[in-house]
Amino acid sequence: MMIAALIVHGLCALFLLGALSHQAASCWRPAGVGRPATMTAGFMAVRGPLYARAVVVSYVLTMLLGDVVYGPYRVDVKTMLFDLQLWRWNGLFEIKEHLVALGFFLLLPYWHLWQTPLEPGLERPRRGLTTLLALVVWYALLAGHLLNNLKGVGF
Amino acid sequence: MNATASTNRLGRWTLAALVAGAAYVLAYSQDVTLFYYYPMVGEFHLRPQADSLGPRITYYGWKAIGLLAGLATLALPARWTARLPADTVWIGAALLISVVGWHESHWFFR
Image 1: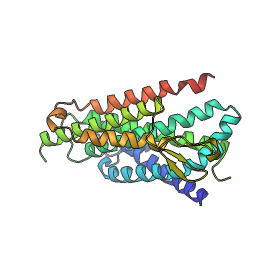
Image 2: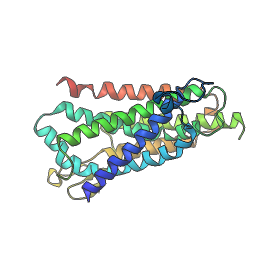
Image 3: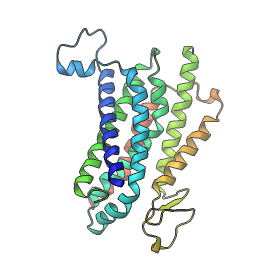
Image 4: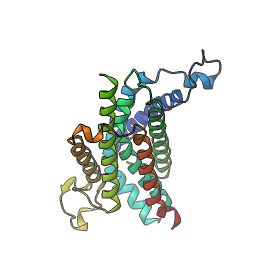
């Protein structure tokens, strides 16, 4: 059961990472640019507001599933990290859990900033906050993946 | 919703989010929590228990503190948050993230 929760947690995180990466990239796309001619331009040329609801739902779902697997992680993995004095690995996870919590609290202003139409003067806050959230999710997924390679929950 | 109402609402959400984040960071850095969870026995407790219950989780309690602080901030009068600059949201978030990075850096220098 816990392995299934961990797998769904990872899949939700991947979905979230893709959506937020596209959306954050779209914020940095110069205005007035025509049809995308390259793969990078195509990556940035998405309609960001369409992603907001999916991002909020998948962020909350990913975090809740992370909370579910945190119990076995605390018992099996964190105990092992301390026993083997793998402090850096533990630090990776400590930062992950704190950043994910901070990102969760930021979802309300994030949601508000993606309500269309965007008012003048709110482009920079929207770009800044979305980019920060994308960086948080990138860090969380990479740290979680590395730790799962070291010792997976439920194994 | 007109532009002013929308900006005022952003100020409210921003302050609530940043207060929640700051309360969370304060709670975890001072190791203050609302409750403890013992995953080996599946029990919640308001006070730390004997080691026989296994390792405890304080993370859920820290998040609850952040949530409660954020909700309390939403009760503030709208005029208090109306003049909050829109950039506060991402600058404040970046500051909180920096504090976390600084506070947790000790794990990498042991």
